[in-house]
Image (cartoon, rainbow, N blue to C red):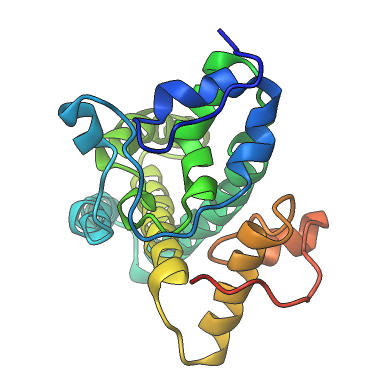
Length: 237
């Protein structure tokens, strides 16, 4: 299904085109188009709707879920310091998961038709159209599907009373990640810490795309040796 010398038509739905690029997909997807108006993914309005999510939907949907899970551990008798430790641990685990997924799954090399297609849906679209504000956060329906195996994994490696707060902390870490990611692309920070974080992330998009995999923190890039050099990133337009 890979077509030799295939050219993507940006005026047509993209998802089922990109697979035809074959080995050329990796080069194509890492040549960003900087525009706040994103492309059309599907011909179907229904499937197109499912790919678009406003950033504020993430905290609106998931923060009440975080509170519910944390409250379950409180009801089971844990003290506030214990709950705080569990939530902070969950957030810490999320930061490592954030780094791991971004480095090893989101940046996996593909060349087959379906490999390219799935990668484009998962993360390639964000590198091709980094300022598409409606495709910067993860759709809640997809997150809900992924929450089920992750929560069951946490239940296997923890106790019945600590699992809810640990999971709630991890889910809170995810919310912080998605909101931070949106802000790094569309916010205009004035203080030093967020300005540096924005520069660090845009560096990943526009200069060295095989380094700088952390979003909310550069901690794991420092630990695993993937911290980019300090040359300023190209500014988004």
